[in-house]
Length: 96
Image (cartoon, rainbow, N blue to C red; front, side):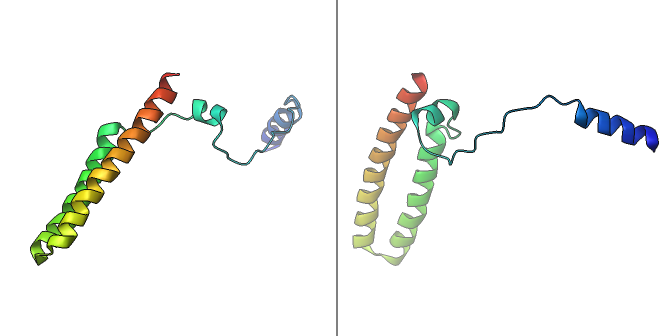
């Protein structure tokens, strides 16, 4: 037991002094964007969007709600366009 204490204490005492880590609150800065690799692929995001709207559209179709089906169809196309624009921006930033 004495040898273990000596080994551990020597390891603690022999560590070089490190400067204290600077804690910064997370912010979406150009530096943070460069460090962070985007995790979801374009296909995965658009497939998730498609699945979500398809389920809602099928429910509206089952109830015969034509107004809701038209609303969902328009919303789906709008959201798809928004996501494609955002994904294009993300791809351009990653290439930089």
